[in-house]
Every structure is written in structure tokens, then in C-alpha cells.
Amino acid sequence: MGEVGHKQFSSLLNKVAEKMNLSSGTHPDEMNRSQLSKWENDGKNYLYIAPNKSESRAAEKVHKEYDGDWSKLKDMVRATIVVDDMKAMGTLPAALS
Image (cartoon, rainbow, N blue to C red; front, top):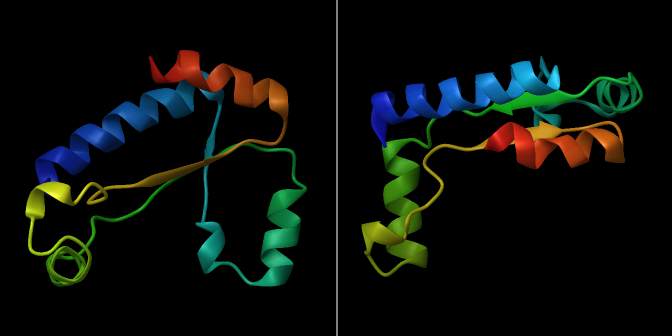
């Protein structure tokens, strides 16, 4: 997808973040238990846009999991949206459209 695709992906998700009042945050996988506990209970909704998958990691995945078929690689860019309650979850489909 490259840099252009990542910029388009980020632009779309930043519009979603504005509609849903999402804060940018550290990805949950990168937090220690104390940080995660505080983050889970702060009442905010979050958007985390991960960096592009590296070319070496993408090649490894394609060869190991997709028998060399690059067309099957679907997660070059990825994001996590975390909401605090079901009401916020209900607004997500409209924000994505």
C-alpha cells in the first residue's frame, strides 16, 4: 500500500476520530499493566493507527502463510479503535461511512 495508501487510510480514520471525539493513544500492546489499567478506566475513546507493516515482515508472512501469493496480504495498514461504552460503539458504523 505504501506511503500514499497509509496517508489516505490515516486521513479517513482521522475523520472518524473527529466524528467520534476519539483521542490518539498508545496502542494497548505497547503499555504496561499499570498504564493499561489507567487507560481502560479514563472514560475516553481512542484511535491508534499503526505504522505500515515492514517489507521484510510482509514478505515473511506472504511466504509462510500465503504460499507466496502477495494478493492475499490484507493487513499492510491497520488501526485500533477502542470505545468506552456501547453507545460509542453504536456510533462507529455511521462514522465509518
